[in-house]
Length: 527
Image (cartoon, rainbow, N blue to C red; front, side, top):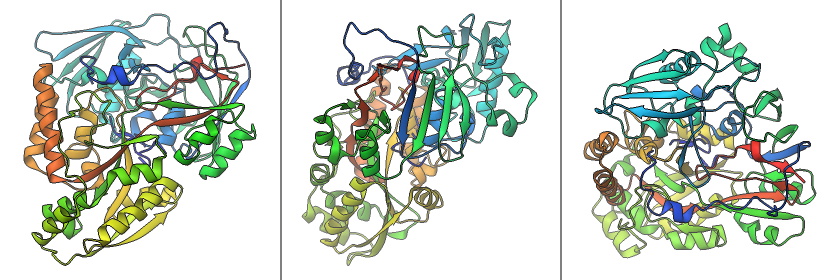
């Protein structure tokens, strides 16, 4: 998962940050029909050339795919490195650097066939040795999103074109796991360089190469002329700039200073869509905005307090006031488009009487004081914080809003320096195990239950059962039970399901976004 700071509004990754099977997508396929390329006519033909200027709210701090969860990192390294499988615009898993795979009868051995004639950007051929090394490196990394730690017992190259992966147990999300950016393929042994040396001038199989970058700031990518994709990449260069202010993002797009902005503020979506020369691309995503509660803060270790908060929060009011019709009120901590989302989940909805009753049953019947952490750059979340502040005041809970710039915001919640915070979780892969384990497995999810320190043995056991269950109907039942337990126990309050909103100049063609929020630019061209 990536996190807005880390699997968050990929303001993360990563879930950012923070991340499934290709079977039975339920409502996903209906919800995630591929949008037409922005501004393109059926008869238009791609042409090569030009520089795409792409403004984002955060820039990369690392280009090591095996050791990051941050959104700014992911969207850059996605253009340089590639995994064995990728997630298509419709949410399905597709072979990419692999042509396919086979699985043993016991579900523990996977054999991948490497796509022939793939080369790295320096012209060297991709081999099974590169793949085996990359998966082992991802497994051993300290990165929170490798998904492979404890799952793989061995990875071996069989000749130059096959890789055999043996698992410690059957693992249902495995192929989806390796599709994550965090399991991208790099050259064997990093070509004999140290990680610092290699990732300063990385070599990958992706459509673009790194020309220059300022840590946390502007990145310039150039076309990889060795890329073996179909047709593209068409662009000569891509320049990722960092614009932290929402208003400036919109102004730069309207003025033609950039061709793409990564996130359109919900308040501007309507007016921007009706303006000349620009459009708003609305894409469904595996994403949910959350109000997260720190279980280390004594009041939120009390289940009745958490339930009181859920009853006090008016999701419909927040969505109406802050998203201008671009989002829907959340009904589960699973996004409604994600595999195994259960529409039958019953959340503790808005009911001030029930909220007061729950608080009276807690150790804090007269209320308490708490701080609510939000990133200062996000106007909608700051407005939501004010609504939550007013709502909780009605049940005796006094909230102080702490609005910090993004780097400080990320650092604070990852150090548990907060009582409540608002952030966004995005599933990076097609299987919901990423979101479930990242947010609920306190010991093994890589984030201490999304930095809440929530821990419930029964819920964690269900998460582990779903990971090894091969039967689709049984997995669906397990995830339905998990969603209901979360709704009842309230380790966090799901607020809304935001739509991915990208702003584009009319000259931008072939631009598409998958439900994980990833944009691969090899098909993009400029009219």
